[in-house]
Amino acid sequence: MDHHVHGYVTDHLRAGGVDCLTAAEDQHEDEPDEVVLARATQLGRSLVTYDRDFFKIHDDLLARREHHAGVLRVDSAKRVAPGEILASLLLAAQAYDPTDMADRLERHPL
Image (cartoon, rainbow, N blue to C red; front, side, top):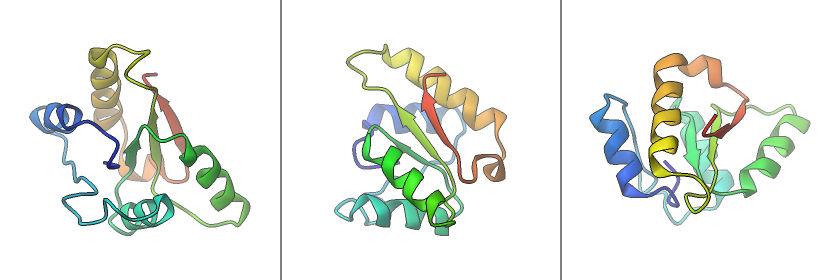
């Protein structure tokens, strides 16, 4: 979980049985986005974020033929109901094997 993701999202996903690790828990909350994504990839975890910068980071990595473990980009909670976000992320967690997300960027809610 990127540092922009609200705690209630992490708490709800954990309550739903999803194994989550926040950037803060991994002591990477103050690192640049590229470092946070590289760390998530090293751990074999997709990254959940609200940050639009990951569109460019994703494109740049693929252009350089580099890989990442996946990014789930959440639309701003100001425009989308929190319940929609949570339902979409829970569905993704249940539907995808970690390898399914490799080098993908998905927008949520679906």
